[in-house]
Length: 168
Image 1: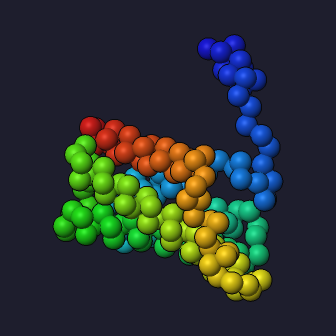
Image 2 (image 1 turned 60 degrees about the horizontal axis):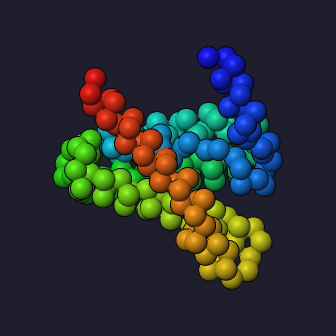
């Protein structure tokens, strides 16, 4: 198994990331979405907020950045939880592999992306100014196949996690 792992790492290396890099692999969307599919929105927001805050504090970032990044994650959890709750009534249980369940995952995932990009664009607009739409529109990645596939793969990972948790 070790030679196979080494061969795959050599064949498909992940480029080193920087603060400005788009190659940073983030799996926060799938964790937040899986939580929203399994738990009450308030609990998901609290857990995501606490986790984001701990992560930000451990990186020793400036206070404003800690608050902004934590709030951004909580907003994503809130919108995903609200969509799941509205779609499923009073019980946030979207673990069924139905057209409705898949639709809820897609709508929640898209809404999370929109909220995330709006939050980032708002911060940039506040710090640097300029036309808001020209800041926000490129962040939507509407025509970037790689970004769209990355988001959809995270939605799929969330669904897999939910199905596995539901099966046990």
